[in-house]
Amino acid sequence: MRFSSFLVSFAFFVCTILTATNCWAQLTSPQIGWQTQLSTLAHGVSGMVTILDEDSIQVDNFTYDGGGISVFFYLGMDDTQSSFIAGIPIGPQLKGTTFDGTQSPLVYDLPLGNTLEGLNAISVWCVAATASFGSGSFAAAPGLSADFDEDGDVDGHDFLIWQRGAASGATLSDWQSQYGDVLPNLTAVPEPSGVLIAAMMLLLWISYCRQ
Image (cartoon, rainbow, N blue to C red; front, side, top):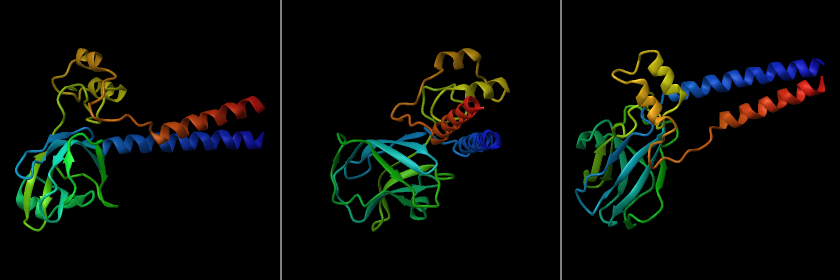
């Protein structure tokens, strides 16, 4: 009986922590789902870049002829040369590899300890020449006007924001018509916290049955 009580208390504690952590992560990642279309400045660069979470991006339909010297994706505060000079590289060296836009989406993570907070632009950046081969500034993708928390989908969290009056100019019909929609190019991945919560609920049920 004591073990069952402990199990119930522990499961409740874990569920509470995981739920709070998940909410905090969403609040600290407002750019999730934001996109930019790379401009074509040199070497045939083009493509669509999407922010997947607070420290990773996805590049779709990327084209680049492999030219230049020491070429990387670089993130900066804005779409300017000075910003990219002081920016952060993401992903491997691009020079020497040809991309024709037919390859699978490219997914890159920031170096450990970095996040996309404050990094609003991306460039295919030639370090040696301090020049951009193509760049763009991230912005909320069109089509999900009811994605009030800007996390890439329309769900119950967005309804709560609307209900609290924090969604300026939006109507309930906007949320209703878009409920369940997800931004294109984003792959839905089950939240680990959701899996763990389900496991905790199973333990609660087992504990109840054993009483």
